[in-house]
Image (cartoon, rainbow, N blue to C red; front, side, top):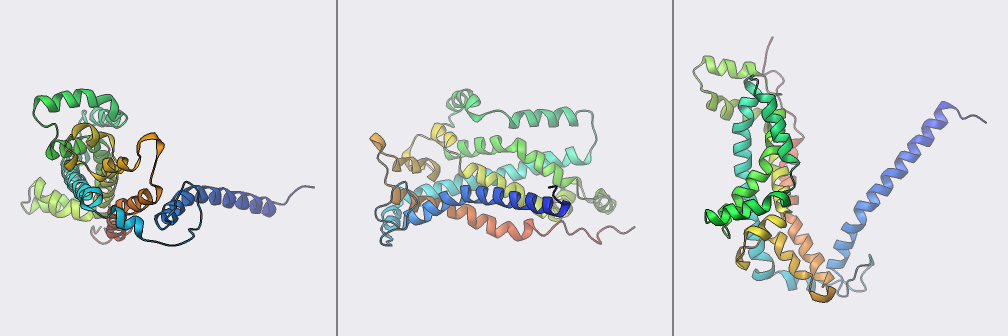
Length: 279
């Protein structure tokens, strides 16, 4: 018995919905485990309703040594690296977007190749270089490397957003005597606010979850960010305090969630260019 087109569409829709539910469950179960385990006094690897709800796991991790100092270090490292990345990406993307040259395509392809390099492949020469220039075990050195590692993809993103801003607006500003830097700061960047927000969030999130770079470049325990200090919850012989690990994970994720909430409205607001150029 042949199926009608409408029945086939219904079957395909149900299959797609089932697949989406499976994917949603795969992402939801780890999050559910983190929430339940943070409130469970006897948490383990199983997703289970706790027998009793307690905040002792949060009390145990809310100390300067475990949480506050590492989070402050993470904010300094990732915040400084993000600001440096966004500033350098805007300055690098502007000539690539506004000026035509035979070197643009090779330069962009080189940047694309740089995004595919694994950070572990370049850490040995970077470590040797940092030792030579006395940047090892320094916050500023780690910030510089954070920015350098995120800059290639940030330039790609920034250029694509910058291409959407009409050049006629800058030409009008140039006619009034504005320089290229002034037109970039006063016209291009304000109009591509959602693009700047995307680059900012992407760069910050990638730096926030980076364990390997600060683990290699920072030696002093007081300078370690939260991405490295979370390793302290995994003890020797496989012993793990799951409840405290889950509580710390929630606290560790809070700055990223807050950053996304703050910029989500601008990211969804579009470029707001309607009416800016009149025919």
